[in-house]
Amino acid sequence: MHAAALIANRLHNARPVHNFPAGNHVGWMDPGLIVYAHSVEPSDEDVIILKKRTLTSYSDATAVTVLGRDPDAHFGIVNPPVYRASTILYPTVDALRRHETRGNVQYGRYGTPTNFALEEALTALEEGYSSIAVGSGKTAITATLLALLEPGDHLLVTDSVYGPTRGFADGMLTKFGIAIEYFDPLIGADIEARIRPNTKAIFLESPGSWTFEIQDVPAIVSVAKRHGVVTLIDNTWASPLFFKPLALGVDISIHAATKYIGGHSDLMMGTITMTEAMDHRLRKSIWETTTASSPDDCALALRGLRTLDVRLKQHQQSAIDVAHWLATQPEVAEVIHPALPNHPGHAVWRRDFKGSSGLFGFILKSSSAAALAAMLDELEFFGMGYSWGGYESLLIPVEPAAIRSAVPWTRSGQAMRMHVGLESPTDLIRDLEAGFARFRRALSD
Ligand SMILES: *Cc1c(COP(=O)(O)O)cnc(C)c1O
Image (tube, rainbow, N blue to C red):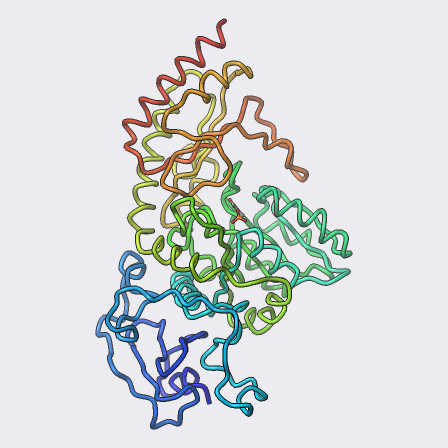
C-alpha cells in the first residue's frame, strides 16, 4: 500500500498527498501533519509521524506561507529545491518492469517534486483533491476540455469567456464534432433550458476578463448537478484566494497562473484543480495531450504564491481607489468593477467572493483614434499589452462586441481594460490625470 493511502487509513479525516516527494519523505498537504515513511510502500510500522502541528486551521494569508514546502525534508532549507528531470532511474530490472516508481515521480513530462509542491499548495487553497500544473493557462483549458469531451457531446460556454478559449471551442472542438453553445453569462438557473441529453459540461468564467459579468455560480452548479453535467470555471481573475469554486460545487477550477500566481510577468503556467471524481476520470487523458510545467517555473510560481495574499490585497485596494477616481471623470461613461455598488453583479460578487483583484473595465463617452493615442502612448506607469496579474499597471482599449455571440455587447463607447499594479495609486492617478488632459485636448482639436 502507498504510504499516503496507508496514513489516510490510519488517520480518519486526513487526506493523503496525491503526489509526494521521492525518497523516504512523505509530504502532507493537510494542515497538522508532517509524516515520514521509511520506504515508498511501507508497512504500517514503517510510517512515523514526526511532527504534528497544533494549529490545524489557519487563514489563507498563513496558508500561502506554509503550503508546498517542508524544510525538514531538505536540510532545513526554507524553500523546496528545483528538481529538473527527464529520465527517472529504477534501481532494479524488476522495479523497471513493474513500473515501480518512487512516489509519483515517473518521468519528467509528468513533473517532479517541485511541481508536486506547487500542486499540493494549490489543491489546499482551492479545496480540491488534486492539481496539475501545465505550460500555460490556455493549455490547462484545452487539455481539460479534450480530456472531458467526445464527438457528439454538447458544451455550454459562457459568452464572456476568454477569447482564445472561444477560439479553441469554435475551432478544434467543433472540428472534432462537439456542439458548442454560448449562453448569457447572467443566465443563472435558467441554464436548465439549455441542457440537452448530450450536454456534457458547462464552462464558466466569472467575472469575464473583458466585460466583468459576475455569474451566479451556485445556481448554475445546482442545475448541472441535477443533470449530471460537469462544471468547469476559469478562476483566473479572483486567484485561488478570492473565489473558491470547488467549495460551491464546481468540479474543476482552472487558473492562468501566468497572471496573479506568478505575479511578476515572467512565467507562463496553467493549473487544473479537480475533485476526486474528476481526477479519476481525467488525469490520464489530460496527460495524453499535455506536458507538466517546467520545474523552474514551478519554483517561480511557488515564490509568487508566498506573496499572493499581500499582493492581491494591495491590487484590490489600489484598483478600487483608481476606479473611484475614474468614475469622477467627465469623459468616463461607466466604470465596470464588481466591487463598486453600481455594478450589476455587485450583490452576487459580495455573496460569493472574498475580494476583488486589480483588473476592471471602463467605458469612454466618446473617443477617437488620435485621442486614444494621445492618452495611451505617453502614459508613464501604464503599459499596453495583453496578459495581466503582474506587479505593473496596464491599460488597453478592448472590443468586446467582436467576441460575443449569445448576447450582443450594447454599450456604445470605447471599452477600456485596466490592470492596476503595485505602484502607488497616487502616482497612477497623476499619470492618468495627465493622460486624460491629453485625451481632452486631442478630442477637441
Ligand atoms: C491569460 C488568460 C488565460 C490564458 O492563460 P495563458 O497562460 O496566457 O495561456 C486564460 N484565461 C484568462 C481569463 C486569462 O486572462
